[in-house]
Image 1: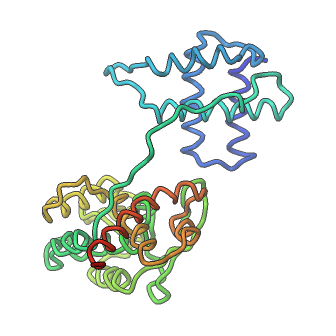
Image 2 (image 1 turned 30 degrees about the vertical axis):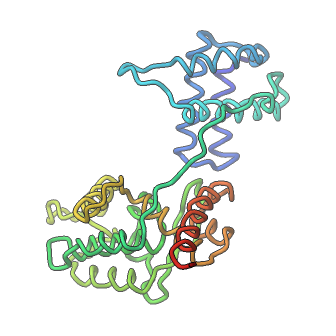
Image 3 (image 1 turned 30 degrees about the horizontal axis):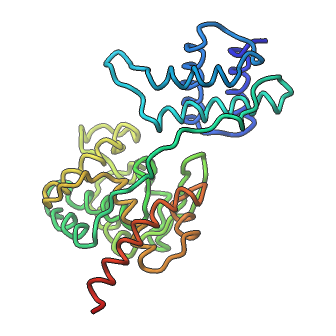
Length: 300
């Protein structure tokens, strides 16, 4: 049997055996398809050697698409991670091939994140006029993003019948189909409550668009991730903030404020829904810098 057939088996295993998310499976399929394109022919797994990997990495590094865009180091590593997962599956099933642990990832620059100060957050919130069209909705969205650290896709998928405003909590299914409990601040719960009182519909999505109000299809009226990203960007620009501000910037700012105010990193990991503590540790250098600024400002 050759690698194309094994790849099909591997993707089925990811779906059924490992319960991987649809997005993860799509990514694996995309990256492994590129390895097939590089090979030029359907080869048996036993022909994958360290020499093959060196040539593949060179292929990825020199790759350009139709628009002459190349692959960044991080994206190249995603290809290698997918290949290692595939090889690990083969080894586990007694198929002779290259040991995945022999393949190392390329070194990437240390990841940094952009965060907003409390003053910048307040400036953004002040730009929302509650009396304006969509004002109560946009206030509720910004308050929810900042008080929960939700990913934009998680916010998009919220339904009003799932959000308990009295207990100020709800459950979301995050990356990798991982469930977690999310907590709302009093301000966010109040903002959502006020927004829902303004609503004259029985649609289930928590946040809806105002396009063609006569359409009563839940999903057609659900506010999209693109619309949420656009409104965050709009209020940041109105507030005079020149940084690139996205819903994920609010997530970063939420996590940073928790750490600065004394939350332990394991708790922050749970609140963000990170599978690995390593992902959460990207915030430590930001909080160290913030704490130094506080020290310099208040210690004489």
